[in-house]
View (tube, helix red, strand yellow):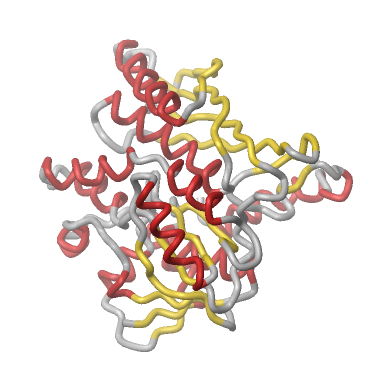
Length: 334
């Protein structure tokens, strides 16, 4: 569902659960971020999130692992650690149950890698398999990372290349090579845990990391626009510095464009400021719906090298793709 439609659907809930009536609800429907956060005491806050979707790859074990990594990503986007997860699954009653066992096994392996535990779950019968997690995480109440703190002058850092939606679409159309699809799967399997730990090492707050989000269904530009609007700033993105999977442009030019890309372009187009003739292929890549995408982080310029080094030390990657400036919307430069 697109962000505009989702906002309309959630509006009745916002009037039912007014945040002022729940003083320990630090982040909920009114604030709207990557996950909900509930304060337990001065030193502990719980993070709650959930996600599930149909298969993006054919292998059941890999699908489970990718879906689990994607579900846990919102905890890392808030700067937290994963504690507990519950399986959420839908499965046809005319398919081999062993397939679902393999999906669960892939998810379990990824949750264990995250340092969490699966404590149960719920499964229903459906015509198409679907899988994901309801995840609980933990963070210090004073060290929560949100979308709303970006400041002019901040450096923009992205931790994964774009293009997973394009490659999985190419696979569904049976035109992706095994090597190209494996490159996308490898990226989707990477947890954002290391990047979240690097953020906490550098520090969240004035003079450190100011804002963050994970890049998923709304693409880089959709999630970037959310960050810009909530922070009251503009994001200036340099196309030549944005990392992509090696084959993503080839498959876009071949017509392998996910359906969600068009919705994302519609969402951001009124807020897009161009300084040059942006090729349509690049707009589609930057609006590509990501599965288990990377983190988009804003950090004070003096701390940007330290953050990039910390992410790499945790086994990840960090690309400097632009900066935060005064104004509104998204500015794209060459």
